Length: 307
Image 1 (cartoon, rainbow, N blue to C red):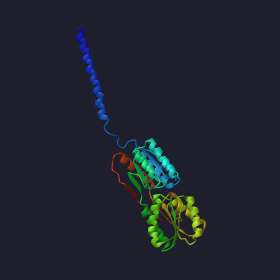
Image 2: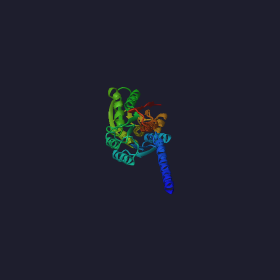
Image 3: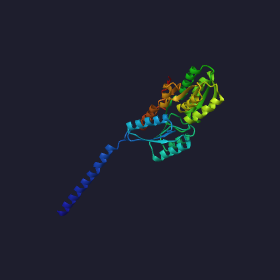
């Protein structure tokens, strides 16, 4: 009798153990169905320089959108140094970010960094400037060729046919400098006399120095197109110091440039929308990480700002 009772107790314990093993299994199957769509992504953003108001605004737009969408954004400043940018991107790869946004210092040099991210299976989006190698999910930027052409047409309207003009170019190797110059020269080659063309590296102080030299060598210059507003404002300082009347057109519509246009000092600037570019970059990144299809190229509209 005792043996039968013992066997009954052991059998009951085995049944209870089996039930307890099944319950957690059924619960886990209900809670492990797929990734958390859109949640807690970590996005790295390598920016060419934060010493330029345009890119500060772009970064702020990206940060605001990341906060709104619940993503974490890590911004690193390449300080206009292609080697530092490559190192920054490698650091982001080692951190295991989900996506990398890159605003290249140099479109050709950045290709190896994009390829490194590709090899680590981290998707890349280029912002404002393109990369000349590696695979990118999307490129988000204004149409720089169209903007350069818009600037050329406007400068032509100010100075007239065959006027002597100068062109201040951006960082050599950057897609923005190349494309803005291409657009401007579509107009200038036919209707203007470009007597000086020199880089000032998108920098205000260099724009001042370069323009001083251009004015000494070419005293009959009546117009200037600068590939960005920082160089345009530097050129404007040199022109005002020389007491000359020279029309100046910039690119970016930074706050300082718009103020100079409103004051009647700067003749115009091509308005990009850096805050919107930053917002769209993060939004596109999250959409891709959520498994949505995104466009390979996303243009952001331009506008001429004039007095």
